[in-house]
Image 1 (cartoon, helix red, strand yellow):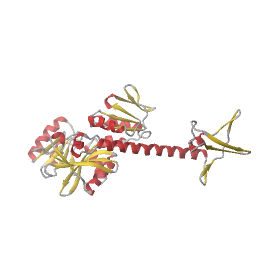
Image 2 (cartoon, helix red, strand yellow; image 1 turned 180 degrees about the horizontal axis):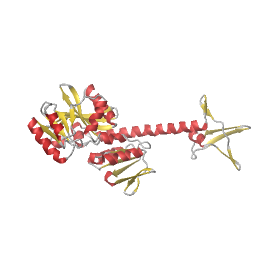
Image 3 (cartoon, one colour; image 1 turned 135 degrees about the horizontal axis):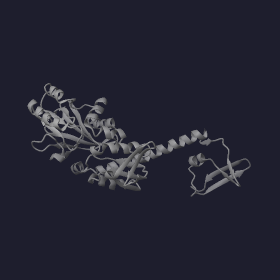
Image 4 (cartoon, helix red, strand yellow; image 1 turned 120 degrees about the vertical axis):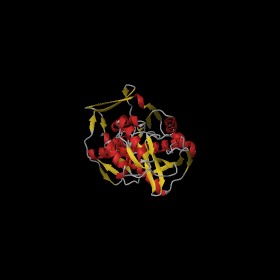
Length: 360
């Protein structure tokens, strides 16, 4: 099988590529920054370094929110012919906190109360009604960047005045007091592969390791693990990180990350997360190819009018006679899985020919 990892070539990506080589005969390291996409009446054309991107059985594409549009376009063009663990929609949803919250709300996944305002005036009206402290954040951003904390109406109002100059939308969110801790879970398929509890640095409301937080391995309870997996499904991602707050209301999902760093959680949990991702990609690609083969065979059988008789299939067709040779329909070659590299025994009598493989 042939695979490609399209990324910004982080250390996490290099670890994943190394592990993928255990399950794929070829793994190409594709730099996301060197990909171009052209859209036309003939479809989407993905170019890498100026040449058409090769066909791959598996494409694992990931990157920061700044590349969400091109990642979605790549996925749109290849997800039907290659196994991709992230749906095209996931790049739009997962890289936007507001769209993520909408998807979680639709899936009835519990999360902190979140507000968005259409103007500065309406935002201040919201500030006048909600309890403090609150969290204020930009819809796009990673590693805790663009997240602010306000403990009063006055401080929140001042932050809003500053944000209004940036002319960017922002979210107002209920603050959940967890003592500066949260849970990061790595979801792979329908399981939580590993998880860690993060504690923010002293005086820091964010628990992100990039913000100076510390981590310790943890095992999620059934409810939290179920929420993490459901979050991945809600945003269309088979591989992602999910951040959870442990509150008096129960576990609450605050964020999902389509391209999580693996260094911190690998160091904390001592789990080979990249290896687990690579194994999953190998297994899912094998299943994807087998499913494609079965669909192709079903189509051939349907088009050829094959009829099953016991353990055999029968087809009524003409035979192409070329000089002294007979050429069988393509569907027979496909269905029998005969190869020109093999030897065969041919049993012949008047009105009947039986062909079978020679040897075991």
